[in-house]
Image 1 (cartoon, rainbow, N blue to C red):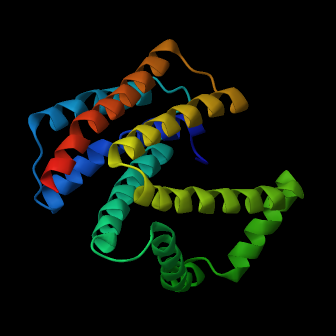
Image 2 (image 1 turned 90 degrees about the horizontal axis):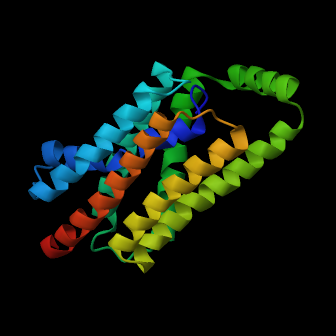
Length: 216
């Protein structure tokens, strides 16, 4: 998000279902009906169209969004495996993940960056942005945690189809609101690519979830 517009980031991240199918196919050996694979065509095509016509395109930002998709899919796969057959609620499962992530990644963060780099970065942010930077970091931390916590809690309370459709609507709301708030310039063909990708995500949820239910 530091390299490209927020709207462009989420347009690329709407290609998450394509990563999910491909990772499940090549890493887990799972197969899907032709309708699922066909639903990936508008997703990939829409994301590609949006990327080609993006005014603020940046390869680092694009690759970051693609890696985020891959990591998110792996997280979902292993989360489902971890929660399957376990008497652990979604909220508690996410709490365990957060604590373990802190323990595992802290030594790497200290070794790669360290307190001196953190202090320098913090002072630079305060000097360029101002004291409100502290409140923005605090608010973002709270909202990001709540977003992930509610996501895991939702998996316990609603059907997979409802969750998939809600995830699609989330992308739309983030893309539209970020364009309005940040005044991101959007070409008509760029908007068309985003719409095609989101429509493909919705179609994917319609054809894949019934298959998942029958398989389970």
